Image 1 (tube, rainbow, N blue to C red):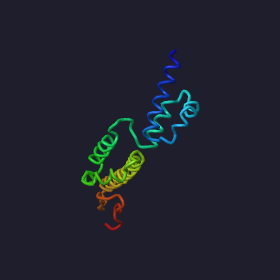
Image 2: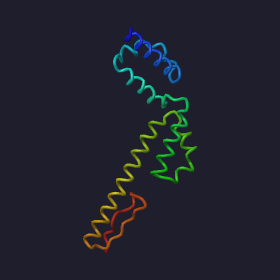
Image 3: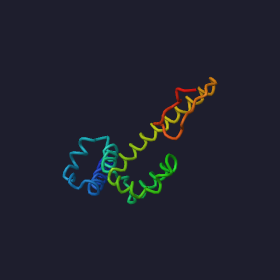
Image 4: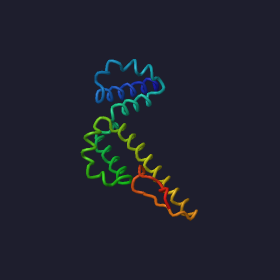
Length: 144
């Protein structure tokens, strides 16, 4: 019947994931399926997220390509150190990518704030300097 076929598919998928990422959990297959009944795909995703896999045989290459695209957009100077970064991120690629996104979102927000201050100063006719190189540097100086 259809339900049994679906259950067998979920069981086989879970076993394959656990065999690859968490062999010590293979004895928990039935308990995991029971506790995630109807939410099997969430279970599979959480395993992949926890262990840093993508489900594809070339997961490392996929992560390297994601990092490459990210740095091409946000910080091209990091591209030359990509092999070192990938080595440091090994096994926790998803977490590191999340941290990178947070870091560069804050950086771009600070740059946007500096740009806004510069525009407002220009509109008011004030003669103030603004540095756009690093968001940690000061915004407009207090002296004219």
